Structure formats: structure tokens, C-alpha cells
Amino acid sequence: MKGINRIFQVAHPFNQLIHPNHRSDKKQIMKPQSFKSVLKNFKAVFLDSYGVIKNYNGLIEGVPETIDYIRSQGIAIRVLTNDASRSRTQQAEGFHKSGLKNIAKEEIITSGMMAKHFLEQKILSGKIGYLGTENSAHYILQAGLEHIAVKDIDMNKMEDISAFVFLDDEGFDWNTDITKTVNLLRHRNIPVIVANSDKLYPVSKHHVAVATGGIAKLVESMLSKKFIHFGKPDTQMFNYAFEQLNRTGAFNKRDILMVGDTLHTDILGGNKFGIKTTLVLSGNTEAANAEQQINSTGIIPDYICNSIVD
Image 1 (cartoon, one colour):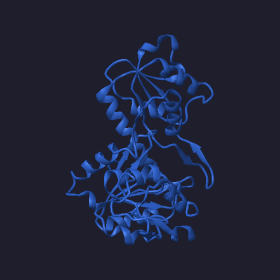
Image 2: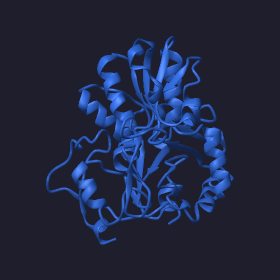
Image 3: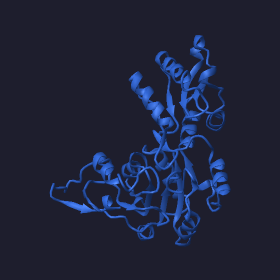
């Protein structure tokens, strides 16, 4: 843990901007704190799912007790996840099966929900092509339009495709279907939606896999195009959670804490939205390299905790 106890440059938490009062000789020591000591200052907490509540081994030990403690303090909970593969009903069922039975589906907000709302409002005709699994397509693409996997698209009838969605990192042949996606989007000027903006995710303690957002970024780079991204760090999910929260009470942004394990999604997203952020070291960001990542990115959390159970 010595790396975290070293000195960090002070930066404004919003949008990676340097604080206007910052001077090169002003420094601040950021040490891991007890999550409970941080939590007591807030009326609501936004929790990332992967790396905060669960990891590659399943539910993180002690999380159910932590959730019970949060509720005992009268603090509202929302789970904000960049997962477009399952509905929030399926997400809640997954939590329940793993042993976390005190999270309701209404408390879960997914990037897939945001993508689904966009498609329902914006895409009114034609077919929606997708890269991902049939399950994720069935959940998200219920906009009354036909959806079709990229492998099944007839490249001689591309004019039928009115939108394209990057859904999941499974359910397709990486050697052929990504290439087919590139060729489709070279020729069709259509809205392209990225339902999960995560670029990678851990599959073990020391290894990661390429996520949907990483595939989409690769295709964006090749085509020099800009796609429509949903999920953290973009603000749609935060706005939705904030509005939903305020239907149950009166909350200001200063009342809310965003807790996540990834600087570029959870922490940057919370900073951009204008709420306090806590980086936990139980997922993507490890204690050994947290200082280096914070210094190199300029994405500064307000707090650091080992985990929410610490």
C-alpha cells in the first residue's frame, strides 16, 4: 500500500481540469480511508457493479453486510453498471443467486437501458444490425424493429440497415464479424450505438479481456468516425439515476457519492457529473499501480478506499 500513501498533485475533480488555485508547490497526501468513514457524509451512494460489488470470483466477501449497513444509515443505493448484456431484472436475479438478496431491480441502472431508450426514440424504421449475443439483442433492441446479427446481414442489401449497435464482446466470430462490421459501416452512414463503453474487464487477478467499448474504439479509429456511447463516463446514466433518486426524496449532487474501481469510467464520470467520487482498489485499479494511473491520467478521485467492505 506504500504507493497510495505517496504524494499526489491536486486537481479539480470536474472534467480533469486543474483547480484554479492550484500551484506547483501545493500537494496533498491521499491515503486509503475506511469506506464507512467516507460514507457518513452522504445521503446516497452510486455503486459500480464489477470491481465494487463483485469480481471474477463472484460476489466480494462482506458486500451483503456492507449493503445492510448502508441501508441502516438511511442512505439510498443505486447500482450503475456498464453492462448491456442483461436487463436489470436479470442483473437483480444474478445478485440474488450469488447471495446478495437485498438489491432490487429498481435500484439498478445499466448502460443497456440508456441505449434502449435512445433506439426507441430515434430509430423508427428499418433493421438494426448488432454485434453481440442474442440475449443482449433481445433485451435492448425491443424497439419494435427487426434486429439482425452482423453475421446474418446480406452485404448486397445493406440499405435495409438503419442503425448498428455494439452490444457485447461475445456471440460472434472475431475473425470475420468485426471485419464485416467495418465494411458495413464504411458504406452505410447510419447511427452507431455503443451500449457498453468499457474497453476491458478483468477475467482473473492479473489478466483482462477486451470489452465491447474496446472493439468499438478500434472500429471508430479505423473509420475515423464517432459513435454514440452510453454508460459511464458519459452523463446520461448519472442524469437518469439522479432524476430517479429525486422521485423518492430531495437530493442535491453534494449528497451523492460515486464509488467505482476504474478511473476512466466511474471516477471520470462522477467528476464530470459534479459529484464526489471514491476509487476502490478491489477491481480494475490495484494498489500497486493506483498512484501511477492517477498521476498519468489526471483523473483524481476525492477519496480512496481498499474496498467498500474495508
